[in-house]
Length: 589
Image (tube, rainbow, N blue to C red; front, side, top):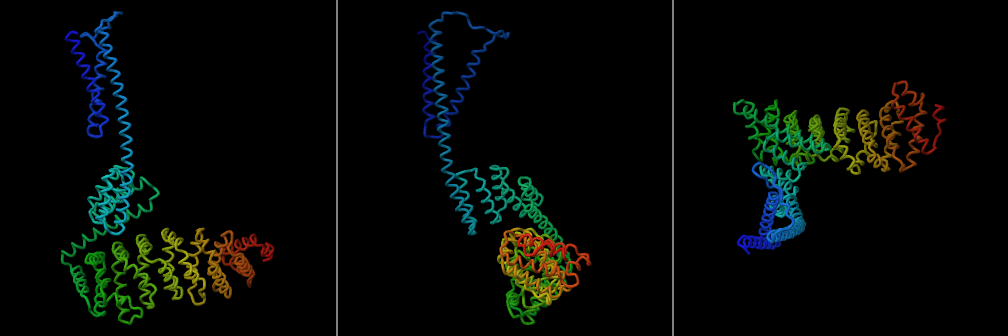
């Protein structure tokens, strides 16, 4: 064997040893050794492909292709070279198969480890959620972080940790976590929500708006929620502008601004007599004329100074109030009206405080007429704007509020109509309707009480308005089903109808409205009580046969075909259902 053959043989043996070592390293338990072996294998395969291409396409300097010799008989060296080539190809094939097997094994092991880590990450997420619910936000962050150490691409861990950071007012870290959540899922609406809220806290108003608008792009069904978020941004930006102007006014030394601040400092003195606070509050109320004074009141913790004062709190909590306690309560309610008039941020600060929200609903049912009147005036003022109505629905005890509102039917026409106007404003809101359907069993007794009202002592217009609200709400099938299933509610309708029949001319509008409500109840099928339906038909026939042509003729002469149509349809509907009368009764009228 000459020197060149020896050299080739040694080179071949070296390749075999290297290939064997690579295969062993790819099967190693050490992931670092495995990774290095894979990279080296890919490198060697690439070099061999390049060498093969060069052998198959050799050219001369003038680009003329050199064809392989046409010799039939090959030399021993060529045979050995060919044998070595095919042997090397065989080894490479084995190497490729080993590589693929190693990759498959690695993939299975990775999948197994991921499943195991997923279980651990989910368990840590639940621990974090429990800590968050208990208010232990630092602990929650720790658990969420441990979960992310197990799996880096779990978006809920990022968004949950972001929420915990926000509770600690660490808005910058919350934003970072939201960015990571979006890397896991670019359509994560929860991440955009937290980003919008964090940017709002940082007063990055335009960025906050963009985050909320992005939610709408991803899920158009969230239009109502996004609208509320954008409204919050607008209100906060407006409030910041108001505070900036108030600071400038205060720095200028204007008397009103200085006096507002000084008077609040005076009212913050504890343990004074009730009249001391009542007098100071009345003076302060007279000073609140513009938005700037309203803002200064908020900036200097006016709401807390008043509502947290122990003497004032005792005046509000006393059931049987004397004249001085009544004066304190009324003066506070008038002050809140002054500082909240047209100022949505002050309205938010007033109503979103849990103690003040409970107090507003309680005062509306006070035994003191003046307190009830001022409470009603304040709530009506809040309900003039969409944001104010949203605050009332979201933060007040609506069951107690509704009970208090319908109790105004026994008051004068002015108070009764004002209360029903507020009831109407709230009932038109979708959120109120959702609440009403969910809480109808608890509200139904109060509404049944309305039907037991004596029309002779109640405001007819307010009673009509209240029944009309019930009629509108009963158009929803679930609400109608509950009303129709309540025997006492149905009997209340018939009882009120009977009392109104005693003087049709006086209570005609009440009858029309009540028939509209009963018409909706009759749409409920199958009917809960056929006895009730039969009685409804009998009452309708009685109305159609009333004196001087009855309500049918009178309603036509007065140009009220809608009410006539209601009576006719209701009557015909019951005839079809129960055969208690025939259409000849109608034709004979």
